[in-house]
Image: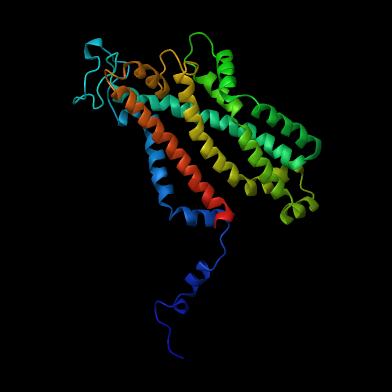
Length: 304
């Protein structure tokens, strides 16, 4: 029998055993994501956007509130790469600092929507019966509210005089966008609770809380995470829309939606104050949607 070569599987049985080990859903997903160019491209964009939102001074040292009418509509210069807007404010500084409020509202509203959707979806999927019927009708009621009309009403009622509207918009988006997360979570829980390992844990005397959070939730959370990634991009766009309509952020707040609303009136005199916030907003929303799509494709066994 000829000796095994260094490159053969017989020369390194440990490696062969490791490579032959079955991977779980998360392992398979990560294996696919590592080779997905869209995943890495969107991840880099998301990282840069988050870095800009939380550490804006890394991208510009200019003060976004330093405005002078003497610089109105001036073009790009060494101190202002994007030029100045109709108030003489640095467009780059305001665009960079505008990411903070937009990302903050998007993240917090998505977390709120995710928490509500997680609770409703798990309860409806696990208990079923009357609980499922009541919670599902509640989801249908929220879905029946026209989003824009509901957002205008809720934001107006929740915002107080003198505030910047961040809290009101966050609560509004969170209360109106949790339904998709709840539906996905319910479907995942219904599928997971009928598995053999859940039945075995139930026979061993596991409590409903332990069954839900120890056995069902870890195996039903993947589709929910995908929905959260997609919802984050949608909520960022929704905040910009509400701010553009003057029912979102207000006062001294800096937001891409507010910048676009202010700049459109002066677009003929200077296009940069309108173009750059729009580009940053579109890139941010696209990055989160691309990231969500890549994660969804990796976690969906039907697409393998």
